[in-house]
Image (cartoon, rainbow, N blue to C red; front, side, top):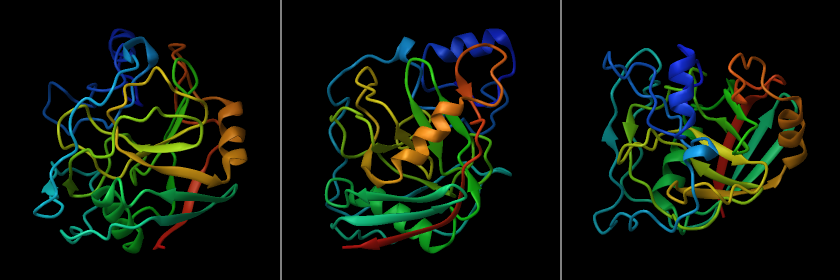
Length: 243
C-alpha cells in the first residue's frame, strides 16, 4: 500500500498486498517501499528464498534515483559479522535496537554505514498501520515512502515470525530492493510473510512505539488504517556501535 493514496480503487488494490504498489507504477518512478503489506494479502509462510551467498562479500547495487534519493555513497563490501546496538534519540525519548549482525551482516553493515553518514538524522517515521498488521515504518529521509539511499541490496536472515519488538527491513516487493526503510512490529504479526530481512530487536523504547500506535494515523480517508502517524515521531540522531 502506498503511503500517499491516489484514489480509492488504488488504495483497495494496494490493501490486498503489503508490497508492490508504487508511487508511479505507470510512470516509471521509483516504487514505494511499502512492504510489509496489509494482512489481506499476508499469510504465514516459511522462508521464501535462501539467504544470498556472501562468499564474495556484500553486494550493493545502484538504485533508481530521483528527488527522494539521498546519496551518501556505498558501504564497504566486507561486513563485520557481530551484533551491534542502534541507539536512536527521538522527540519522544530514546529507543535502542539490538541488530543481528551475525544473521544479517550485510544489512547491519548498511545501516551502520548510513548512520555514520547521518542519513537517518532528523527524519520522520512516515507510516503506521493499525489494521491487519501492526507496524511503525521509518528510515525514509523524504518521508514519502519512496526515499532511500543510492543503492539496494538483497534480503537475508528470513524465516522467523515478526513478533512484538522485532525490527525488519521494508522493500518494494522486487528482488534485491532493500534500502534504508525499516519497520518495528508493535504487536505479533504472525500472519505476515517471513520474507523480510530480520534486522534486530527493540530492547528499549517500546513504550514510545506503543504511544504512537495508540494515537492512530493522522489521515485515513479510506479507512484502511495505514498512513502517517498522528503522533509525530522524529529520529533526531541515530548511531550504531558494534559489540
